[in-house]
Length: 56
Length: 550
Ligand code: HEM
Ligand code: HEM
Image (cartoon, rainbow over all chains, first blue to last red; front, side, top):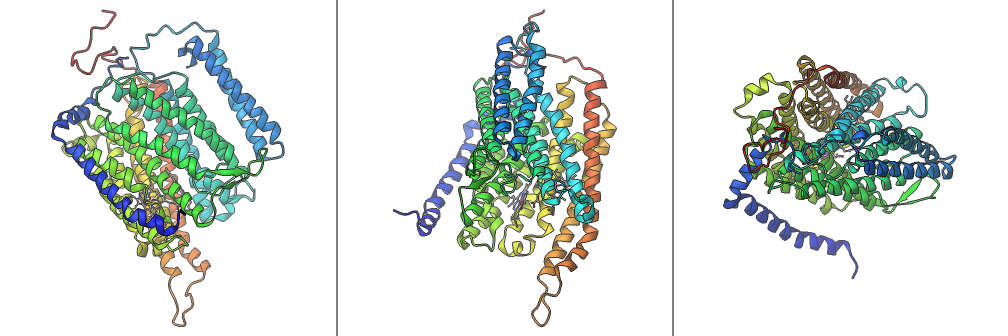
């Protein structure tokens, strides 16, 4: 089967659309997953005091 | 600096130098009579210089330091100084290019100084020389701090930094000799491209290995941006530079793509160079240095994750907005346009996140020019992405394309966003790395800030005016349906703006020179500061572990 212009545009308009929607839903769910909140807060604060040297 | 490598590491460094010298020799011999030969000589000399540094250290005793107790900052320091050097060179070239456009006699009739040759020296000098070195240096800093782990390796950071600079030098000297593959921002020829791939893979591996040693459960978001920058630039660079050399002993090569495919590949590369070189990496800087300097955590960490993925997945599809009204199929243009408009959302989310972080700390912004650099950078980021999304609409692009409006947009992003966030980060990290109390002179930082802001505003407004005047003149018809203005008429109309742009650029350049001077004096003369704690602690414990000496 040839990779024609028509074929690529059909793929872009169908699969392309759905995988991007799935991706955005997935990421939003990850970012707002309630139990991850603490971990994110900790990460956001972790950089404020990091000059005390590495652990390894 | 090489004294801090162990004996075995010094030997590896020496071996790399020897291999490089042989490569340089072979290039010089095989490419005689071609620019490739001169590049061989440059590689040979570069290898020789590094060899001298390594040899001076090779007889020294082994380093006594305990490597588990401190971060490895020597390559970061070197990278920052080199970035400032390139800033002065690259922006100096920019001022010269701008002056040539206003007063063409400033070419001085040499081949190497013609507009077409020094323009890429400017663009590569600022993007890769200044921006690239700043990104590499700050990424070393950020990856260690956020992971609380020392760099994974002591030779590879030097290899990446110096190897990247060899690429920059080969690129810039090549342009002056007339070497180019005529792809914007990807001008260097095939052997330089292969070399950059090697350097970049080592960079990626170094980053991943350092993260693998991390002592934090979560990888801080700045690292995601830096990693996207490294990974995507590698992919873009490899695909866009697929080419067949005309001969193995000469610089000339032919692209693997042809016609509109070649154009699309180039602007897929070009736009994502903007996205992942000039944006993602610098957002990494923003997400680390801005909260750090403001001493406040980022306003919304969740939003930073959302905007990260938004930027990564939208930008990839936006490149075709560079090819509106060309032979590119209409639907591909529309696709690029749609994604460009959607891009506004994650872009403004990032800019807004940065500004909201400062909300409540405006007194710090007022008093601290370093933080002000970062704040203004976030504003210009918001501005240039809004402008970009607007220009990507086909109807708007029909006015802006080929005009100075594009150049104005470029520099709102490049000077207002990229350069300002870099200077802000440099000012906040230099005293820390060299263990000084503050920068040598805060007054000079203040001067730099106002010079940079004035220069950017003058530059950008001049180009907006010039671009819109130019675009409107091009599309004005007389009653009989012929063009109302000749091309020369438009040049006459643009001349005052070109003069203004050169002046604005000169102000910006002056600021960069002040920065270089201030950093030099900080290293040499600012009073030292004893670190309060410089011994290991785990992030779990709020109290530091008992230092070994006590
Ligand atoms: C001292 C400040 C600067 C001056 C005077 C300056 C001047 C110029 C000039 C005259 C051009 C050519 C425009 C044309 O062909 O019509 C140009 C292009 C460019 N400059 Fe600058 N520049 C400066 C700073 C920067 C910085 C800091 C960056 C990036 C970080 C940058 C990135 C670029 C890019 C990407 C282009 C190509 C634009 C395009 O092809 O549309 N410049 N600059
Ligand atoms: C949402 C984000 C952005 C969008 C949608 C966007 C869109 C555009 C558009 C439509 C053009 C003009 C293409 C043409 O007519 O030839 C352009 C050119 C350009 N933009 Fe942006 N832009 C964005 C952000 C940025 C940022 C933040 C920077 C710099 C740091 C930047 C750097 C450039 C450069 C260097 C060019 C000139 C390319 C060339 O012709 O050489 N853009 N952009």
